[in-house]
Image (cartoon, rainbow, N blue to C red; front, side):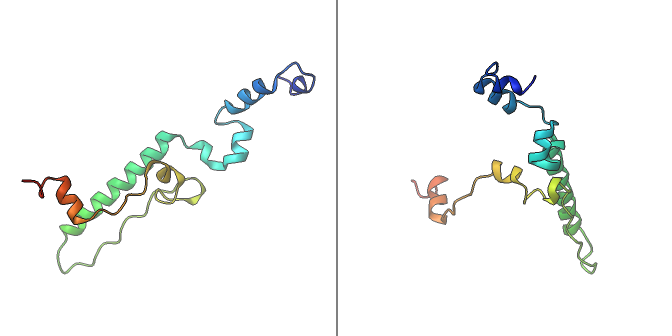
Length: 117
């Protein structure tokens, strides 16, 4: 594909836009725009989140079941992600989680039927 074809009107602007939009993840343009993030697929981000959650679960189990006189355990460090962002700082988490509104106790009671007879 020659980009001069667009200038020579052999390639439409719409076709050029479609070709650019569907470039592979490892293309030079994608790497320039997104740096190291192109090396990570959605599966890689999900696996990093699984590792983080498993580490926290193990830490909580060990903390609860430790000897009372023992020193408290340090919480686990999150798995490194492209750009130095952790799971909570990366856009991946922000995209999938919406802000949770505050719910009052009376609203919860009504929802679960405590206020209904």
